[in-house]
Image 1 (cartoon, rainbow, N blue to C red):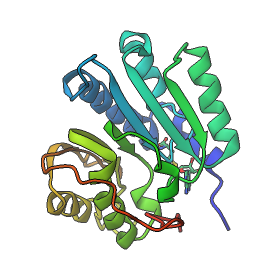
Image 2: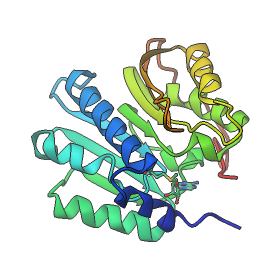
Image 3: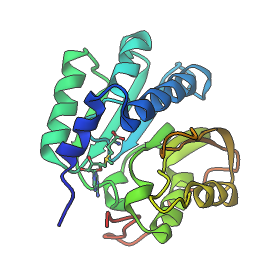
Length: 217
Ligand SMILES: C[S@@+](CC[C@H](N)C(=O)[O-])C[C@H]1O[C@@H](n2cnc3c(N)ncnc32)[C@H](O)[C@@H]1O
């Protein structure tokens, strides 16, 4: 049975929920990435959000960051209802630089023709895919990011007390990323990481059509 992601988003409405607290951290890190992170010669930042949901982590931050004028954002979300909500939120906030694509973020074909970004968000992704897919996705981030590009990611602690975010951090280090921050509240399961690509970006590998980075399980 596939998960009801519309219902999942409802937890954001409870201000003290773990998800609402996580949102606060992700938005804080995104503000930091947009303010201090890399940009092009015209002061423009390109952003990709994988599995973007309704975009509530990204869109309000873009609106407060100079009205979104300096950010070109691509939000990729497979669910048509959620992606339409993100599109409407972007329109309401007056963000012309936002494109919401109803598409499969796990398929490398989705990124063909997409320019590498200064910031990538992978929030709510790593906990829903196998660790092999996490590894493959982190490896692909070297092709989706520009030099010094920043990735903001999340991974929750599991009910049995394990904390898979440690393996995610190790994997980022193995792929040439340096940690900028890691938030792990003792009284909540969510973890938010922020890594910068300090190794050289790699050209998009010549993957055959139909190659996958990840699939939700
Ligand atoms: C845990 S939610 C995270 C949403 C958002 N990133 C956030 O943190 O609020 C996972 C989202 O991924 C979407 N999703 C699942 N598989 C996907 C895929 N292959 N491509 C794009 N989106 C996908 C779901 O519809 C859902 O909105």
